[in-house]
Length: 328
Ligand code: GLV
Image 1 (cartoon, rainbow, N blue to C red):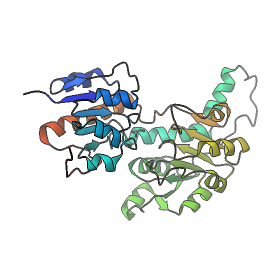
Image 2: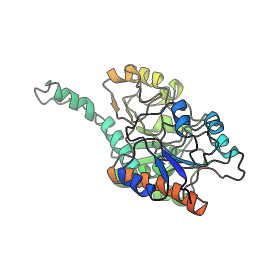
Image 3: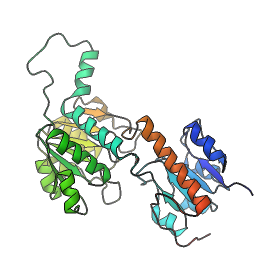
Image 4: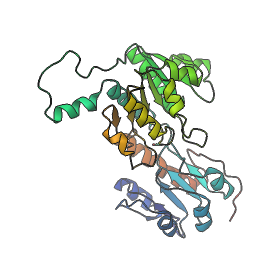
């Protein structure tokens, strides 16, 4: 029997390639060149399944041009690179990698928030520049985490992980806003109170964004929202670029209408708005919130297992759409 053909659209762990090669005819991209749309279409000709990352856009044009494609396994919990209605309409199954990255990503969100509040990178750059000549009473004074009010916008699994760390580990008061309010038991477990978006913006000492990107959440934090925040507040984004209006954020940071920002994601990344690079009160990281070694391996394994399960059992482990009709 001929093996199904799959494309691993980006570089992955060699062990994953090895294990997939026993079941599939595998094409790889270990040079990790990010494929343009036409390169991706060319590489997907005659291919049945693909392992992608957030960099590969799976849209209607691509699906029309790659009619053999049946399943796309994203190695990410977010899947805003999928045009989900188009995939569903054409009977293409999509999957993501939830749960395996929740704690690692929540840890990182907390670390980025703390680094921002306590001005870790700003003070490190000062030291590396050789400017540290003496102790001073007000040198790099930041804001406290313990006892502060933690605001969370987007209260899914990762948001809940950050809430629990704040409430139980640091004695923070946790407030959140989400499209739907959590059930009372989950709120109690996270010690989090539901508030309106306006109240969240106005009361949070440290606001963390953990909501999925969509047309609805595009620029959910723009000039008007930033203007409602406290001048001492920090903003941390570990969700997606585009949820924050980076131009408005850079202006707010420059004018110090908020104290600082921690950003792991950017509009148009890997490009970063030049203004953000020059501001001292922002901590910048290159989209690494889920990047612990074990978690990245778990994400790759889950994406690979989704492909195996699709072709051997006709179902997947972590679907992001329900495929009922196959249009080919
Ligand atoms: C990373 O951004 C992810 O969605 O997993």
